[in-house]
Image 1 (cartoon, rainbow, N blue to C red):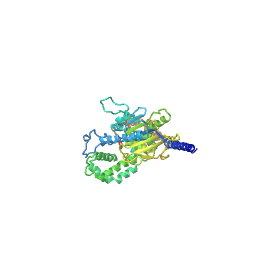
Image 2: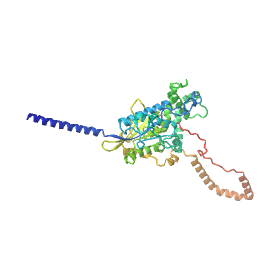
Image 3: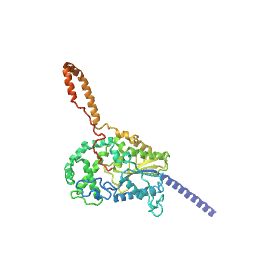
Image 4: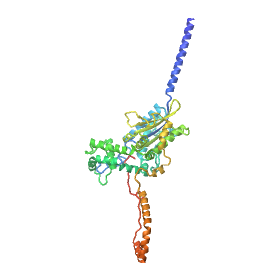
Length: 458
């Protein structure tokens, strides 16, 4: 009897333990059901050589292995490391996909610059190592899985090409307005003594503008990163002040953008990311997992600025922004934005101004909707109403006012002609023969020689 009771007790105890184990497992599963579904990645290329030199520069273009503006070996290493880090996050930790390249799951788009294409290739070497499987070359060749990097011609690229965006009429007007703004003029005035000294030491002559100091700072920073000796006049104070000049340029351009400027500089990219997420949610492209965009600081800075998240510091090389789509345990979807700008620290989890860190996807779409662009070409031609009126507008009003004035004087002219008689008419006719037609030449036409280069790393 006692043995039977003990047996029943043990059986009940075992069932009770099994119940609690199942219940605990259910709770654990429920709390961990948040799963990542898709990610849009935007990173800046790795370290590069200077965009250009300066008159007294010891390092001319031929001293750089691939010339100016090209990815360096350290830049390749940066991107390789980033690729490894991204693989660990999205394959090993979050298990977004199995880590084998498949065209339906993984898409890479680069700006048409050599340094961004090479950065994407270096990144992919880290993301898809030899042991990752997938399509590999035949035996006798290095065991690496090739991954395509897509791009378009620069004159057609509004997605990532800084040159295309910054040559847009509307953006050029904004930049010109910013360059002539009271704030920038005051900044130059406050630093005039410093700029004068640096101008002399660097050998800058002619019509020196703020952009020249930006590029001078860029040259010194790139030379320093590559371990090259800087001139004696470029001491720590000078170096740091020129670096601060670069940060100020980004602050001036991207910290207080108008809605139109946000739409032009980031609208096409935001539209692409939103479309990627909607296609996944609508199951029209449910296989996609990763969209990778290899671009510039002039892509990251305005993207952050569009959402009010730019910190007024130039995004460093190989920095990466991650726009992640999650499915929560209650079946809803959220968007999470992270920014990795330091290899020694975890990425920063950013908070949208009008949402929390786990932003409901429909809220994110609502926040992004004012900046999504339908017709970028039309927007690019639009004249910002807040800027000074252009030459064509002024000439139109001049001609209109002139016609009104002539209309008012017409009766007086008729009276004079009638009173002057034939002799007067002959003198008027003779004077008409000496008049030359007036030709109005509008500024900024197709034959304009304006060279309004961007101050940014495009």
